[in-house]
Amino acid sequence: MAHYAYIDSNNVVTNVIVGKDEEPNFNWEQYYGALRTSYNTLAGAHALGGVAFRKNYAGIGYTYDPARDAFIPPKPSDEYVLNEQTCQWELNEQGEK
Image (cartoon, rainbow, N blue to C red):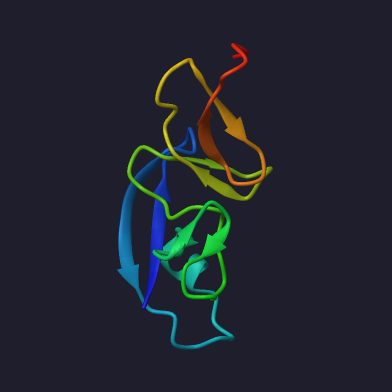
């Protein structure tokens, strides 16, 4: 079972669905018109040792960054900075924004 994220014109995730991924030589992203995301992916790692799609499992309100090919969660507050490796927000203890 695979999951696919729909994004709007601002690259914000508007919906995530469960879809098929049974045929390896078929372009399911094109079929659904959405980007594949992995339910078991967090911070660039797959919990079960599988393929980590796009750094993080997409959620509604997440942003897709095509340069990083990653889903990034909403920024919790101005005190957080983006970890470029994991595409997760981390508390900035140095006061930088």
